[in-house]
Length: 241
Image (cartoon, rainbow, N blue to C red; front, side, top):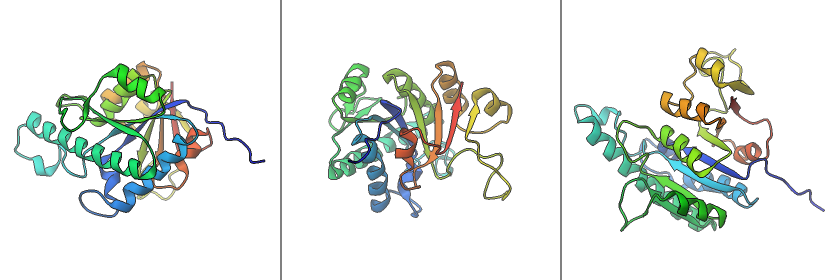
């Protein structure tokens, strides 16, 4: 009889950057990449883990990107928030194809396209085994989707924020520039601050620290990594209080 895999976490908040959806492309959404990411998510959904996802929009537009130079910052940020809704819809459809029931909720009203974010409804969806994709950032300019991830993670009672990146954890230095760089298995919030490690933006990082909400940084492009994280295996880097 196969051994039953028991997840360490019942409810997680997964932070996906918009850039992750591009794959090797320079813009937009790569079909195979988004399918691969969804298969990683399905591996933990099938274990009964409740998954909330905050999606970025950098593959389409970011308020601080060169394309926004000269624009009013608030206006540019609203455009970036709209980009996250587009990504959320694409992610939802890829999940549908994979057999995952997902709902998209937006931090600002666009009800003909997606539901508005309502905390109680989001939690109810999670309890019903549905994946909830949180789009629209925080609904306010000047705040990143990292901050939205920390905020939604705290609001829905997630046990951990999983920051999916292109790198398999946090290193002592940039591993691309310094071959002697080593990966941390875990690091405290205070040490990460003292080392000036840019894990998330300051607002998001402070919110997670104050709420005692741990962060796990891992590579979404490493096959099986998300499942190993959820099972509590030594994958990525844990930031803890």
